Amino acid sequence: MEKIDLKDFRFTGSTLGEIADLRTMDAADKAEMLMSGIDVEERDRAGTYLQVDHGRVHCKSLQQGVEVLDIKEALARYDGLPEYYWTQVDKDKDEFTRSAAGDLHGGYFIRTEKGAKIAEPVQSCLFLKGDMVGQNVHNIIIVADDSELHIITGCSVAHGSKGAAHLGITEIFVGKNAKLTFTMIHNWAETTVVRPRTGGVVDEGGVFVNNYVLLKPVKDLQSYPAIRLNGRGAVARFNSVIVAPAGSHVDTGSRIELNAPDTKGEIISRTIASGGTIIARGFIGGNAVPAKGHLECKGLILGGGVIHAIPELLGSVDGVELSHEAAVGKIAQEEIEYLMARGLDEEEATSTIVRGFLNVDIMGLPKELQDVIESTISESQKDMF
Amino acid sequence: MLRIEDLHVKIGDREVLSGINLHIADNETFILFGPNGSGKTTLLMTLMGFGNYEITKGRILFRGHDITHAPIYERARLGIGMSFQRPPTIHGLKTRHMVRMCARDSEIDVDALARKVNMDEFLERDVNAGFSGGEIKRSELLQLMAQKPYLLLFDEPESGVDLENMKLIGHTVREVLTGGIEPKPNSSMKQQLVLKRPVSGLIITHTGYILEYLNADRGQVLFNGHLCCEANPRNILDHISQYGYQECVRCLN
Image 1 (cartoon, helix red, strand yellow):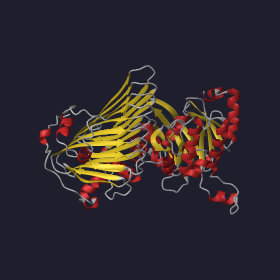
Image 2 (cartoon, each protein chain N blue to C red):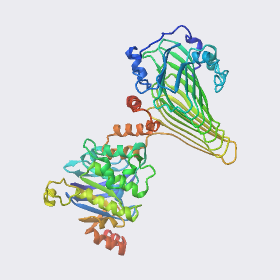
Image 3 (cartoon, helix red, strand yellow):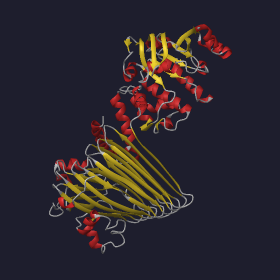
Image 4 (cartoon, chains in turn yellow, orange):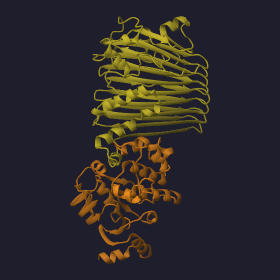
């Protein structure tokens, strides 16, 4: 991994101003956003937050019960959000958190009302348009007690970008018996460097489901969201689907701490290196009983590349139940031949197995987003064999 | 339907089949007997075209095509269908999707087919994931019903199957082989028989339970890579259950 010098990037001066109607955006930008799950028509969406480079261009809630604000506005309106702001991520963790703390460009603040079940997803996109732009964002998500929310957040970069840096802080709060599904689709370019820093906490009976999809090339990405299950019966599940073509360096993983009785954590990652490098991490710590954690990281190397799986389990109390399963390998010939015996040629068989392996189905995404992801997978398969 | 001429097959350095000659006619069901390790499964795998089975001599003709060196999928598309004894699990591939792929371009009612083999509850599950012995057999048959092969290759339909499942499997194999011909108000069975596409079967059995459900025309014993003792399959089974395979040894030596 090369050292990232933040001085290479411009952290000021690129703000577009408000875009009232997302449909008026540039067709190429819209296409990039679509691949990250953003519906510019805003149909079937409970709200939208869109930022381009250094500032918000569009922000609104379309449904009662969920608040969608620019983080700067939320900080001003709610006295700096002391209960939330910089409580889950250490401001001094590294130069990237310090950059985000020192010069905040934007980010979203999304909060549900107690008991509000928001059926449609809130969408957000953090878009990098200018060349050599550095973007500092800070997001806060609060899912109040007994409420439910799905956030689809896409991060994207303009077609033909010569370079950009995205530094994003996200702090997540899932209340008692609340449920958050957080789907993140990264759609970067060969030149983008990405440093998200994410932390969160789940209260009693709360459920946090994190879906992460990275299918497009990225120069250098490092991400390691950490969730603490602090309330009895809290559950966290991470599903990741990652493809690293040549030139991509992806260091990613998830961390779950089981800090209360009856908590459950699951980390499932499916990675494919098709020329690039993937470090697939995972950590589950069991600090209370009864508690269960399972970690599953499976990788395929198709057409070169490196996969380094690092599953970690830490139990600190009697009676904790933690397990893991890790595999790095190839597609089994036996599986290919089985499908060929049903009439599929070798290419059809292989791509069927790869799609099954990546298994985006388990994320339970809206159909149109699922379709976009499936077609991106089909496209990226061209590089794999 | 199928003609095998002087077939020699090697796995690695070992010759497993040594000069097999076999002809299976249209609509004929042929039963293959033989002790463990005699090469029965090798013959089926070779007919399907799997990679580890090297044909060193002879040829295989299927419905007029020389398929000796054809890839697996071409054989499948020409109409050879095989029920696997231990098929692999394909994670993330729903059984429903698999069945639909088996049908290729033809329209099928997956749910109706699945109900026939009691697999409707399995359609949303990954192919073979955690399936029991009987479930695997039913899943294989479901796929074959969608695939509609001309030649059905079946390796031990009764292995790992309880009695109740055996009945269902037996009846279904029969249906796949006969094309489900039964009296219908608008056409006699004879008329249907004329119109029906030919279906033949090549079935390996140890126990012979499957013979209670179908009309097997002929049988043969495969011993040490050689085919011998052609007879009515029930007679062969009676003989083997009484005397074992030792007569084969005498016969061949």
